[in-house]
Length: 285
Length: 288
Image (cartoon, rainbow over all chains, first blue to last red; front, side, top):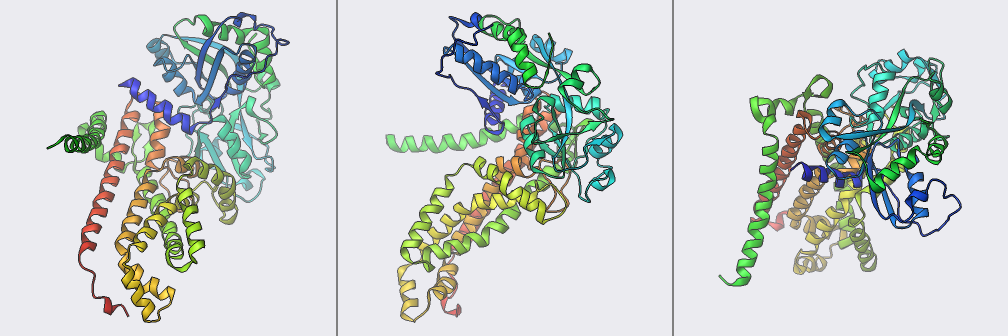
């Protein structure tokens, strides 16, 4: 029964989520084959789903592996950390990503093995047209709880604030709620978006919007907001001065073997960790 | 009973069984919620999972507001379009428009949603001050566009069923095309118009993606048409991602039951309308 339900979830999400589906690339390029030798002679598929913060790194890793070995097929879907746990636990995918540490309960229930391969900050973002680009944690809490509802109160335009948040399956929301909002309530009037990518799109399209995304997602389409004087960047997350941060985990059911093991090993290789920092996250090695 | 009759009987019984099974399935999974009279509380309370309150009242209001508003937008548009296609337009243009409308029924919802996010939402946000543009108004405009083709095709079909002799009579009396439409075709086709409208309402209630992408999904009870809202279908899609083993998850079956109830009501309404309009038409000569 559970399986059927999980499958429903999967199918629904393949329609709803922004899905990064990567197909075998016909190109052959041996030039960058450092750390990729392990995959020589392997074939098979790897299915990945869950946290959306992970996608930029995993997409690049997958592209390199598949370019190097066209017998390997890797699919990457989103869905949020909750989906990652459920789907890997129920055996629907090989790797389930979470943007938070899986709870002891989850680890026990599904015999999960956790692999934390990056540290990521969760940054508050506003539209680049917005002149309010710094605030205190107290102000942030008041915005997300609905106490402050106009940008004028923060020295901005006389426009109402549109709050964007993630659904409860989101590890990004979990970390933001605990570490930036100190578990304060988020207003029920907040718009809810379904992925880091969707959050970026929403805020970059809404001049009066405010939301939060994985630091790795911050680019010129949105402006990071400094919290108590600290701007969320790769640098400040690494130094530890920006405190709204979390590990990025890839989880497997039981000890990974074969192709899955090699994939995870590659994430921890020098090359994998270089991709991690190139995409705006803090490597763990 | 021969083989083919048996086959058809089997097919009918099977599909009836499927419908019933879906209902039983939902009730069974929602059982823990039913116990202790919790079910009716769920229908009337807000959604505050952090406080252990899992009411779906905001979603019921959201679904009602969005689907009704979309029918309000779609109805005049569709009626006008159908009248133009099947009576007022020159034949070639009418035929061309009809093909276009048929084509529109095949466009996937997600495309409307996608276009809406980038074109409609910013316009709504700027024109009506207050709110993010992700609101009931935006969602129902897009839903109206989504359900219009179905409505239009339904309307044109019933317009086309008006007996030729009636139309010829109008021509003989020297009536114009517009008079023909207003005083003969529309009254004659009113059953089709009503049925089409009610069925479109059903489609609007059931749509998931547009509301998920455009309506904003806020869990507060919407107070105005510019407020962000969440529909029952979007709620199911959002919760199913988060959880598989909790009261929160069980309550989405209550959503399912409510949706099922809506649909049943709509089907019954269509049938009632059908039997009502099968009665002989009231005196034609009264219609000026």
